Length: 400
Image (cartoon, rainbow, N blue to C red; front, side, top):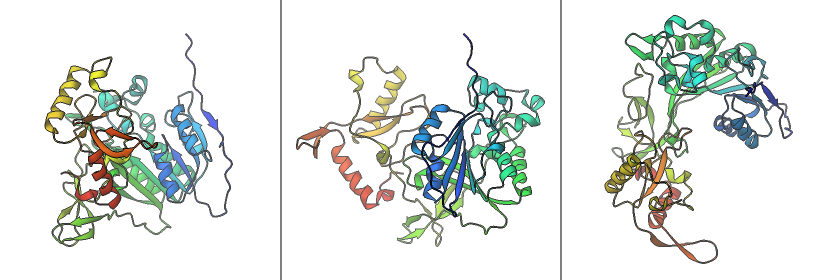
């Protein structure tokens, strides 16, 4: 069977956009389903171009942002049949890029593309001997550099996993930990292009997202612009001062050699007055769950769950016997059980979380729209949670 050769595909905007003379426009690299696009839209920017190598993700992005043009293309590998250079995308006031960390480890880039693996899953002891400057240039972060050198947008926002900071040759004796030299070289190039920058470590659960997701954000701005105020100061309750305060982002340990920075381990928030650690309000997983359909009961499944999954569910049931429902890891051994008051764990492209109902069905004062009452698990608990959520008091209810 002849393998179909992919080519870069340009898709014009499906909806006409009206321009204003003072409109701020943005270009989105590695746009995925459009999370960053939505964020910059809220901030007042209009995305005129989005690019991604995955056609399905582009179609989803296009449905949500029909005013933007799209490219389905590989922006990374110049030798790919569907390659399209980031330098040839249109100029914008703002460039945003959700770069991938799969190219920022010490394994071979080409091998990872061929095998469809993340580079942290590959063992490649010959990497340092074989890696070339051109291979490093294939890393997605360098597409941002190429665009900046060509168009010099006034603002740039890069989002990535925190491990980007360890991008570089392997540390002796630690094949999967980089020394960060390539990352520092990359940052220096923006300095030479007349940008200033600030590195931010933030977790999505403190920004209205029902998911705990630690990410690295690097904001660049032209030196002619005033430095923006990028400090995150969420309002949190200080129990020692007995008042609401603007919490201060504070390091606990600094950045480890792996680059892995997590809220609660490497950083936290503190009261500006007494320096006591405080917990900002976070968004519960309940905000993302559709509880109208609980799916098929475990006992009614045609195909039984794997023994390991059943054992995990039983341990979870015993541990949370007094709570009607909890979230549990659905795959492998990663993740941890969580209450519905807590945010989801970081969600990847895999279906990794299951809702386990551990209590009896309770008749509650809810109806299905035609006046008939329905009975569902958790209804009584949900009433309490929803009331707390509407009153904005969930931060104090989340178990620690």
